[in-house]
Amino acid sequence: MDSFLIGDNPFTGVSHLSQVAGRERVERLQLQGIMKVMEKAISSGATGYTFSTHPTNLQILKELKEAGTLHSTFDLYPVLPYAEGYVRLANEKGTIGLVKDVLGKLPLSGKAKVLIEGGLAATNFDAIQMLRAYVDMELTSYLSVKPKEGNLRTVLLHEIVTDLALSFEARQLFDSFMKYVGDKYDAKPGFVTRNFARFVSFFRDHDLPLERAVIMTPFNKIGFQMNPSKNACETCLSNLPEGEVIAISIFAGGYLGLDEATDYLRRLHGLSGVAVGVSTEQHAADTFTKLKTLLAG
Image (cartoon, rainbow, N blue to C red; front, side, top):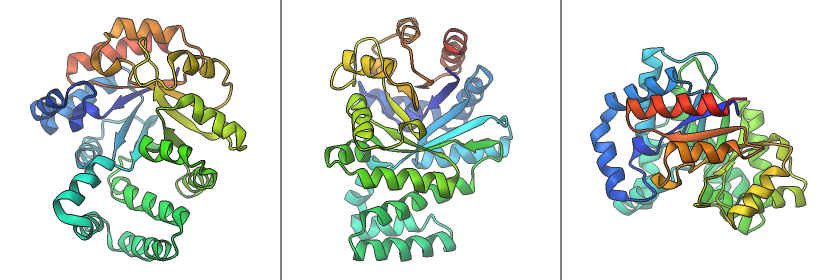
């Protein structure tokens, strides 16, 4: 492995086992606490940051830019869309309020582009063009505050979109997203999925370039979120010579400890990286030091 990524779940209140615990954790951290955790993780071996387009992450990137603490090989892996945020905004402000809120965060040039391209795409029911306009809308604000030292390594499609597109066998959507991200942003296209084996089979069956894709998917000792089964995902990984696979949910939502998680990952062949959320400076130091010591290639 050579990618050891900081995950943003602890910073945005996400917990797979307890929503209450997630909210309490983010209330305890606050922005300055998050920055200390980030700095400790980076000094302990973290090579990148994978994050949703949650407002908190916009502030984190601004702070990292101002602090100038990143090294030139630090990679950024944004995941879009921030689905939970859009659902909440739509409930609070309605669809029109949601659009105004999102567009209000864009610079004038970006706003005009999204309105023109997205509007035309919606009029023509062009899902591919709508996706491209949406990618631009999601990334514009974050790229404007991206630290110079941080490389936009990969743009990942959220599992909600990835797995829905798999269900509809939307080959053109995958193909278009991959080409657009590569051509416009000079980044590797990535996909978060809870259906790893099916994702790989779909790409192979439809002649899509697996070797160009970054796949984020769960791998852990108890098979948490590994579909259709732990064994199927492990077999698929061992037979996958192409592409990059980054393990997430390695602690099974907090059920497993660091030793159990790393012992399991060491037995797998084919992983190129791991993404983990850390919530304290000590947790960050222990986690990334051990991961890099035991798993680095």
